[in-house]
Image 1 (tube, rainbow, N blue to C red):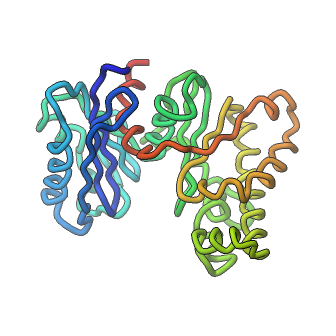
Image 2: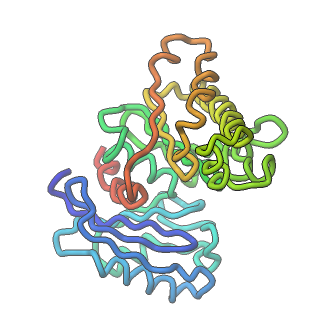
Length: 283
């Protein structure tokens, strides 16, 4: 792993980032605005510019992470969030043809899981779940050291599971703060650090909901570790206690005491995760 140079690419509706990953470090990085309303060809040129800025002759593969559904086997985007011109785009084939090098493609939640597995908290962990908490709530599953993609790369979409009158994404994502407190997570976090009682209670409530989501996950997967990432995870100390309280109610003691809950700390996790697809393919 230390001697493999890989280009990791994170594609989003706002920006496209590419990085040259080697030995657990990003040696060079390039970021461009996506310009998501532009044509297919224009956005591809922006992608190429990012890759061209970091690629070297030693690179063994290019890994790409995207938000949305894809045909994992064909490397085709079925519906990519906020980039309408790329719907049904055979991105893997296009990039592979241009650079004459192996290309891997997966959704961003799965890449997050792989990034933690190979570069972050999940090293030496056989079974884990990575949960991205942000505007949406998604997950990536690692079982027996291998990413579980499921049909169209859709495995791990835990936010869509029904919960109360909505689903877990509503109660564990950014909309929870907007709809219940008419605010943003960032604003409430700042107020909570200033000992604002209502804001502190908001995060306690969030922790209960995330804890219940994890409670359900333990029944299905019983992983060794769950890693929390995304913008909301940065406030983990504010909701850790109520989250743990829900987990403590799990009926099987061995699972309850065996699972570790960790906060992602890896900077540029999206680039690392995209690059890690190379190592997942070797398992």
